[in-house]
Amino acid sequence: MRSPFPRNLSKLCVLVIPFLASCAVGPDYVAPQAELESAFKNTGFSQAPPEGSWWSLFNDPELSRLIKMADTQGQGVRSELARYDQARATLGLARADIYPSVTADAYARRQKDSSNSNFSFGVYNEYRAALNLSWEIDLWGRVRRSIGAAEASLLAAEYDYQGLILSLRGEITRAYVSLRFADAEIALLEKTSKLRGEARRLMKARFDGGASSKIDYQRSITEDESVKAELAQLRARRERYENALAVLTGQSAAGYHLAANGRTPTIPVPPSAVPSDLLRRRPDLAANERRLAYASETIGVAIATYLPRISITGEGGFRSLSSTDLFDPQSKLWGIAPELVAPIFQGGRGFSDKARAEAAYREALGIYRGSLLSAIQETEDALGDVRHLAVASASRKKGSTSAAEAATLTRKRYNAGVTDYFEVVESERTALNEEQAALSIELARALAATHLIQSLGGGWQR
Image (cartoon, rainbow, N blue to C red; front, side, top):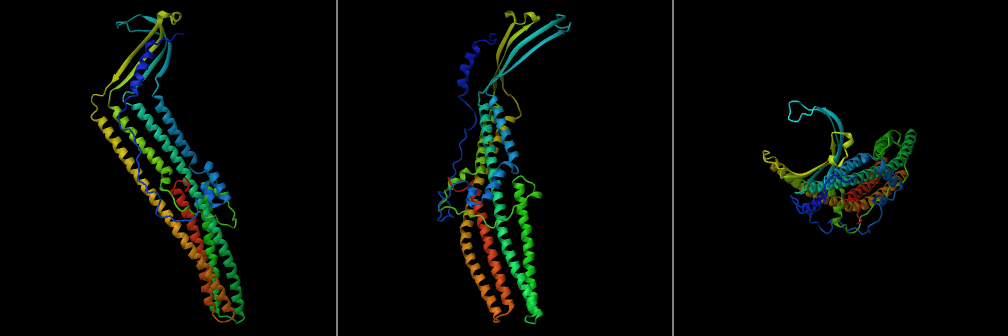
């Protein structure tokens, strides 16, 4: 069937489209170029940059398994993906405004006009089959700005999803590392509890035999019960880490259990220099930058709303009073016309909307700059923690070794009758405290390394 629209409509489109692309009101977005130092001040490590997925730096297969599970089953992953899908659909809606809207209508009806009107034909039939065209000419770039805003919003949603994944992986790593160091401390306290129990039984036998005082016996009871109480508290804390891992990986905490494996994860060490431009890949910074672009595009949209809007409307088809004549050439109809809508008085609505969009842009710019400064602070804090905790760890290990040796010598002196049991208790308590402190610093180092990895957007590799 020959098209009911006139041929010169296509010629009109060819003439109009190049003109439409030539103008768009509002500012053209330029990403802010923040000044960054070439590297962070808290560096000076000797180890070379490791490679691979950042969680593999902990050298723990169980941690890798949990992270892979959380990527698909983790808390919030599906809802964040749904938000991304919404943003993608919104972009599709914005892009649809580029093209003409064509609808079809067809009807067959029997009607009677009013006898008191100028067009009274009595009862008659009417038939119609036509296409209707509506196309807004994007004279001021409103549609293009809307598309740019939707594209920025889509990328922001994508970065939000990446940020959720990074945060989820970081939470799993912290909970898992804390659990493994709790296992190490539990093993230490179980060993200590066994020794304290043996000492308690020995003191009771010595006291019953008159070879030791009641004071020494009571001290042995105190030390034994103290370790048991501390061990129970530590096991409760370990269960909380286990429950957290269950939730983070999308499982029920009621039936979840992670057995001890007798080892602690390897603590990653950053390289000698960490370039500060790694911050630009942080998902939260990237998302805020895209929201800034969105706010910039909406200024143009706001300006275009109080400028004249031109549309082209048309129709083409057939209409007849008889069904047999509907597609007769004489039944052909068509019409095309430009339509201009210009706001005359809106009580300052357009100017207020522009002012609102400009203020929203300034807000987004402030949020972006603030998040960049916070990212630099977080990274410097994490680098400082990693560096200084490494020094503290070395000192603690030396102190722990020395305290353990002193406790052994004190025990020998007591067995030889040179010193009393009080000195034994104090030396063994000091040795235990030093060993626990060494484990605590190692845990702090692992958590600081995880914080640094997150601060850099997922590791220190480019």
